[in-house]
Length: 148
Image (cartoon, rainbow, N blue to C red; front, top):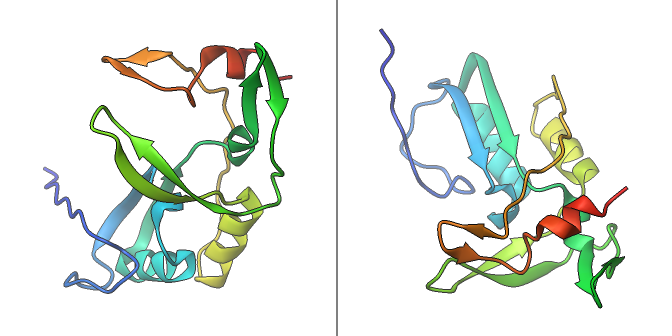
């Protein structure tokens, strides 16, 4: 029988969690919202048990470079420019600072933190223009459908 223990907190700073505690640490659409990627991954590594795994689920960074102008998908910024930007989320328009990170930045920082990459998956995103009433100008099906 397994027991689930969930912790929700800022992982950039040390929290009151024992080292070598978790079997899994899962970043679901959150890795770009931290203020210090190296501290985040070092803490995650410290909290994992010896056979533990970190799973990072994130939008492919190139997607942030795309826009729809005159019904055409265009590249509107450089993939290599890792800027932070303020975005809004949800129907209540919560403002968040998001760092657009290249895949190599995430992998190289993970290595610096003591981690290694076992598997890297890049799958086609299945998008909907309206998810439970939340409409997004970012998540447009045609943006994804017109990519090579």
